[in-house]
View (tube, rainbow, N blue to C red):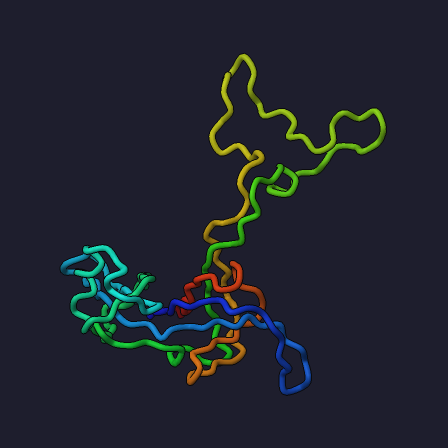
Length: 208
């Protein structure tokens, strides 16, 4: 089963292990999420659960989304994510899923939208080397040759050049769950997680 949860990044802190080691952790408010839709092979071609997170008022949503939530007794969610599951999964529409699906010490994969850093040059964006900084050098932080001349008379698509940096989906695998607090719906994950504070993340159980 590759089930997961939707959560919100609260921020980073540190805790002490039993032997006094300082562990940097990211605190995530994970769930509770509700099963909004169940995908089945006979109808959709694959097995998945669509989970809803962050309760909102139905009147704030579009008419199609209001209809999508009509079987949830008046509940509606502002965030939807889909998680692949096995055909043997027994969850049904309306079921609630919380951090209880995880265990301490378990490894998870977390995805989020990285912080946007605006327009960046080739050195910051791609890690290019700079030219000599001595007097007389006219090559410091510029891109250099991009390969276009009489042939092929254009720049090939995908060329690494200056441009927008960040604000894209980033996934970090094999992050360890140091602690979980089911009553508060909190996950404490060792290390850093993509995105800024209050950013939406998806926590996915590693397939085993």
